[in-house]
Length: 113
Length: 112
Image (cartoon, rainbow over all chains, first blue to last red; front, side):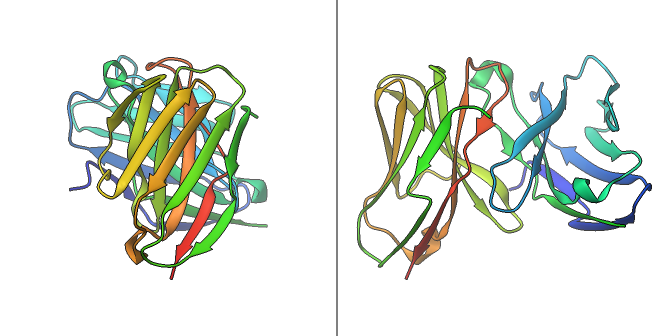
């Protein structure tokens, strides 16, 4: 049973466009929601994270939107660039439980120049 | 980059053989984690450690064991490797249980 469901599996966007990736979770005890970016041959790198006491967090061109009642959160990449082409993973955890992350299945993003 | 070194980076072995993967950190972080990455499944937690000699199971722990005798080293052992354990294995560390995790660059393991 996958506790964090991520969509779409892949995404193609033109340079300058907006990339949107969605995640839904089931466990209402989750209280930490990070997004990771992964390039081929590398480990995932933390991109941005949010806790459920806020509905939105922005860092540069990356924004997380969080809807606690719907148990959904999303990543928006504004003004997408070819260098953003990577695989993105959403995740969730309970901080008090050793921060064990439960990951979504990943979204491969390709930004065309 | 967080000081995490995984070894080996690539390994090919045969079914039934024992395999040990090593994660070495230079950050003196308390928490260490082992994940496996498979297409469509994201990353799944195998085992984690919250201190020397303190370990616990993750969601896919069957067939795997771990040991942590020093703060800096976390070993993952496949006692008798099976083809279903072919995967990319990632180690992660975090300073405390509530802090972000930082990942190594992975070990690609193929079991024939």
